[in-house]
Length: 525
Image (cartoon, rainbow, N blue to C red; front, side, top):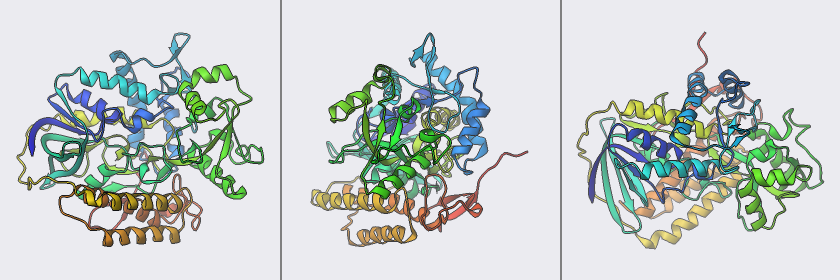
């Protein structure tokens, strides 16, 4: 096993990881450990943009109100206040570093997205904001000599002793090598868990293993029942999908059912720009009503040339997939964003000393029950900076006494593992999806238990670890969904179909402890 030491260990290479690594490089040596390549992450695929107040007609208070409204009563006030007030400064920092956002007549070009009452969403490359941001920061990271990158690494264990994180162990599947990195501070930025679902907008690597890592180490995990389903994901018979950004609806696209009727205006005053949970559920209901696999997004009443320039990559993907971008695009909801995650405070700290989490993997209290569109990239910047500001105060590396054994691969377990992955993904999609019931949730918990009892787990073995992580993540989502006997935001129970004030609280799960609910933090007068 190779042993390395750094001041900062950043696990994950999305926007939160890259930005935090660049920020951390001002204070010491940094290791970025990433599961595949540096540019494979949810951030890279984020099309819409990044929400922040940059216009004189807008103000942080309005952004705060939109965020709280979308969060359905479950946002903690202080982190939202921090997000909207520090967000504009983080945007300025990026622009000062040389990041080019799209402009119009010399001013920042601002888009409108669902749930926002003002145009405040900055974008880059039209509909490739995440990609442009990630590419920009990858260049910064590659040009910084104090940052070392370790690719194709599956981190399988956090080194935690006496409630303090000392680093992590990882495995490289390409050359079967083991790596142990010890660090003064460890930051988890591995993204969410939406790829545990069969139908998802996420890269296949986004299966919540960072959440499982933290859970196994004793971290508190919160609000895992809230999975955001993106309303408009491209539908094809073969399952191939990609995101049709909410900004397309922001430009005036209509949602139309198989009878050729627009259905959103009669459901919500914001019609197609209602919060995502409402749009996704409305689409789901239309599909159920007529036995359809999809609805369509109609753009034929809009300016085709303007749309082509605004959404070049979506236009190209539709064309390649045989859909007419200017007429009707077939869409259906898909698992998109993990609203809950590892519980952190306003400085990105977990309940384990020297362990931080940032980005989609974290639950800062900002998102509530339903993330407001384009707040996610902003959260990466605001809380990434805050985490590093705190982490740089950790001054010593404590040598780990943990067993230094590595792991190996038993390829005989490969096909069994993949079969179970597909079986679980299908069950999550159909029974822990947009609409849930106690019976369906219990059936999934029973399936997870059955797989756990039958799988031939081996100690320190690659597929066994991945199987255990997947079972843990799906258990966290499903058991939290079963415990929350109400419907709110990204969690809808057919058997408890209204909001219940008794559940104005965050679900908290911890290894070997019962699930509990803790109150939401409201504004102190």
